[in-house]
Length: 466
Image (cartoon, rainbow, N blue to C red; front, side, top):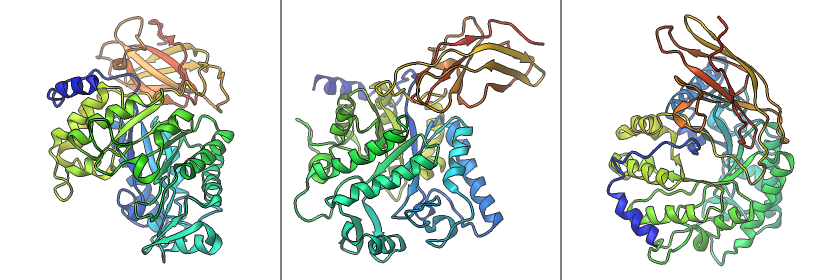
């Protein structure tokens, strides 16, 4: 509680307080596909439609990278429907305009490739329990095949969290994604009882689903990050009440226990609140993180006049505060950030002036790769061309990535976030656009495995290939 009071004392300063940018920070955004509310804004009926969807996504990813975002949570399972060719569930209508109809390309594979090309992670966002309106295409298909798993509440359909087969069914979906795609994470949404559920709720049923999914994913690819988006307040605190809306007591979502048990690598609590409903609960999440990654879900949609009409300073304070206590940040949603609502995009660009690395999963694997070697720099009229010899992986991942650092002094300090030039490069060469009139840069390159463990650096030491 003393920490909470001290944090509140500092809070008055955080709207303008400059907090040092860390080298490791989880910076994410939810990119929603349901109804195309974030992406796509048009349907794909032919080659031109496919091209427009791809161009729109690439433009969005370029701008998100420029704002320092390193993790994309892409809505992949929508409402018992998907944005990829699945053997288990039909196509969602957000891409082609008609549920069950293919848009003519694999949108998930395209998104993965484009994120990786930009050094960003892509996590498959899986909406778990809600399956849409009772008469919707996905819900109808699912209840025809597995009627014992589906429960009707009002005019909505839900997978029954208490049905034994629900865990296996959702694990099959996540296994399909993990097996078929080079995703960086599985992100579980709505992994809880519906708010409208009548009767008692048992946390063990929901935890059984999480455990089944996590074990299945980790069996195939242990480096794939497991995460979820719990309700933004875990439970009542000793001095601050949750107002009856919390993860643990209200909807049986024991997310802090999932961190403790090792079922989750990351949490993205949906903290779309202000004042006493935000800051004490942010501290609680971070203090109960058990060394895992926690990113506060920030409700930038609340800036919009038709939503909460918050002032921009509210989000700025939350960004500064979460960084000051070692939390990451995740924006809900992409459209409000990219629309620069009340200047939030411009503010985020200033807040993230340098790239940041996703924190490593040292609890899963802590052996670093060997260092790259033979780093050479060719200085040309248009920039510097770097080449190096690849490193060796000491984990079970399929390949290594590389981080590039640069400074005007030797040796290059790879612990300084200001020197991080490019992250998660997938080749052993890169071109840095510069002019010959700019000061000479010295470079360092490190290798990174799929768990995020970084090697020692290879340095240029001023040796130039002219």
